[in-house]
Image (tube, rainbow, N blue to C red; front, side, top):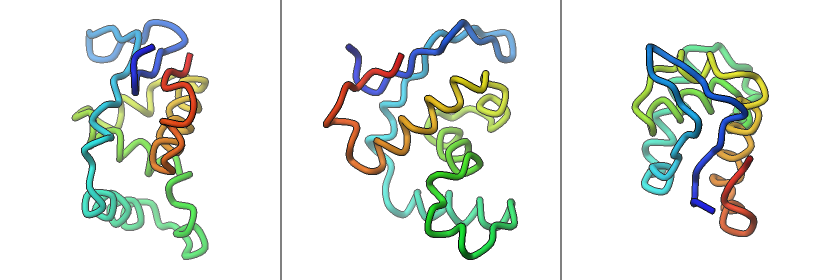
Length: 109
């Protein structure tokens, strides 16, 4: 199994390129400062309530923006994914950020 690879449920085409998986290995290199920048951007752009701040890593806009930053793809790429792949991506990122990704299978299919 490949570490930090998210297998998509079916081929996904965006801007003429077809994807069958997403390589999320770049998550390993993200810093706390970069996470703070993503958080600030999400709070500014999406008018979150203060109660949402403590669980911001569960917010899809946060996940999309973080992945956009990490994978160098427009946020629309992630917004266009099929819903089942969005949920797999969300929980893969959450598990990674919580340090749980190495404790279980590193491939979500």
